[in-house]
Picture (cartoon, rainbow, N blue to C red):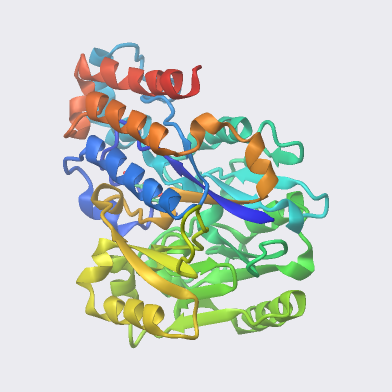
Length: 448
Ligand code: SUG
């Protein structure tokens, strides 16, 4: 039996709004506002606990240390103590914000994952994303490479690759631009990669923002993961979607098992590839791919991006002991979906229609993450595995009520309630916050 684990990342204590998300309207709009790190971490934890409550195996990654003083040093600042941070804060607030970034919380950008059953060498392949498009995220690549290697170190057939080379033609943002479609057995998947930059120097003149994923990076990942070209697909993000603020595919499309839901303007010139996808899905699974395209006339791009509907998580609940029936699939939507009449109409029609497997909707409050442009799906990385492999993963990182309560207490105790970026120049706040990730690792994992 195959299963899909979810891996979420615990939000860091320096969570703030630096406005650094390229093409990310929420990030731009909230730049410089006060953040609430404690609430951010608790909201994320609550969302992960909801997923776990449906019987989905839920794991956590712990926050890496911030600030990255090495990074400020590389940029020429002679930093060592908090008082030395003032010049960086005053002359280069982007670099300062990057040094304190908690953007690693968006685990969907941590890596691209290929199930062992999809790859030619029958290994689980993981490529940490290089995240080179923005000031603040590329440091995550090596940090998460270490964390993922550790999470899967006892799996006998897993390769955690290095990130792709950090060059502009290989910009990569991980699973946010990748979808795996399969039947309910999860045993064979079709891999769909989505890129914004085709690499043919044909960038649309009206494109407002740098596309964060290139086709060349998708192709390199598919090659190193040994994916069968017949079952691998490439779709280009629509320039209109990127310009409207869809900086990742998971802002305008979502998928789970045989279900693919996307906005009409998610992809450009995609008909031939989508037809090949539908035909191959039918051939490989004997089942129809259920593709639901939401028309722009019914849900304008701008409203889809405001409500973050496509960033909802779709789950298959698993039966737990004592329970005899569960919904076939559950939709976890950000509560912002309730504020948009057009989105509400779509959610209701999905839940009420008999011809699709979504039977329940749950709304979650993720105010702090949403203000940085991250909804429920941004906060998780999915990893398909044979169920027996769960034995090989560290139980200390599996979210159960014990880990939940322990983390909740530590977050309440240590995380600041409110933070403005400039506060981070101050001693002793700086010293206190930089210790928290080490203490969390020590407490939860027994080691730093
Ligand atoms: O990369 N926001 C993240 C949001 C990532 C969302 N992930 C997915 N769509 N899967 C980003 O833009 C905000 C940081 C700031 O405001 O400075 C930020 O990094």
